[in-house]
Length: 505
Image (cartoon, rainbow, N blue to C red; front, top):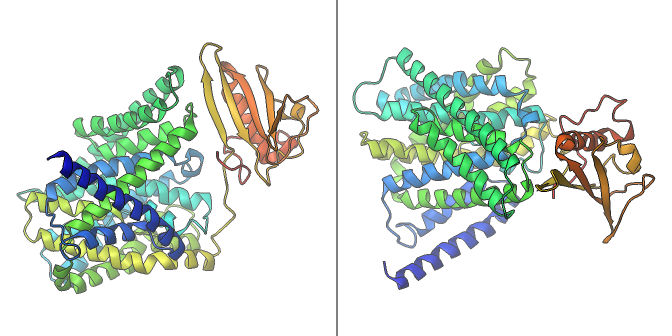
């Protein structure tokens, strides 16, 4: 490649990124997941559009896997442990038993209704059994759900990729498919290895990040993403589930109160957007639209059974042991949007040389597009009809920077409109010994507060805390933000964060 060709490639890639970024505004206004816009860009550039020919399935799969690692890492970093902890049992059952039910029902529909061979039917059933939380939350941004419901959806989407990938690889392998009990044992083993590797690397990485002072704040986001990627590689090399490993490692890192967390979160979110854009545009390039006509009706039949039968049955079976209200069961059934993972996984049988694998890819592509168009715009409406929307809860925005030589931390706290910290005196914060409010910034002016200084909405506080009391100081700040000056008497501990109080910086 010459320098001239490189310049042309950079120009095209930059223009695609700018168009994709601008398209997010369209998707946010229409209520459609942005994945549809990105896929459309890829199709428009492809051979039935501008005329760019691209058919490298192997490269697409490699880039797709890399993008999924980044997306799962970003999702884990942004998931709040206190929200998904109560939902873990239900999400775990949905990600295992629910996946098995969905695969069985969908594969049967593909075989008996669409006349597809059993092997191809099982592959299709496995491929489309993975949900995409990014697609769900992109259409629910204006209708925040209760924490227990978002916790189930987030945890399910993070967990179910791992068993689905194992199933698709097993069904796509040459030779006979393993007996069901051998397949279940293999899935259990790979999930156990992936979970062990992810938890171990996440804990070690969090410990290292909190005890090693890097010379520049911009190095912290790079180190965090590198640790998450190591978790994926370590899990995969140990013959476990790398996808589960990276999600769990990122989940631990995201809840470990790391230094310069705002910069890390922004960096991860930007990488996540780039991964989504690149992956979907590439998948759109791989599609040949004029070949989709013959597979349109089979995709509609399979998608109808998946949406109206397989997903609701899997939700009913999976939530049977739990006290899940019927309204939440209905929304969980309709919220099973498909997105990045199914289309990427549809390239696995193509690389493995499975007969009719191109047809499998076309069916999955049409199914994802059509039913995302149906479910996406109606999901906010359904949430409102079921009265499941509630006021959005924002966590207390605390940014931490280590003071290595002083053996302390500098906490930056913002008080937004509506916070119960409004009207509280500095002395009423009752911070633990070894911590203190050293500066208040109010309406552009800064001053050193007195114990009698009354805090106001819009104030920004600088709190200095020594290493031993850093966590206790943050916990107390969150408790006051949630319960006001009587937080201790009201039983508010700050463990779950401040609900609806503070805008993240």
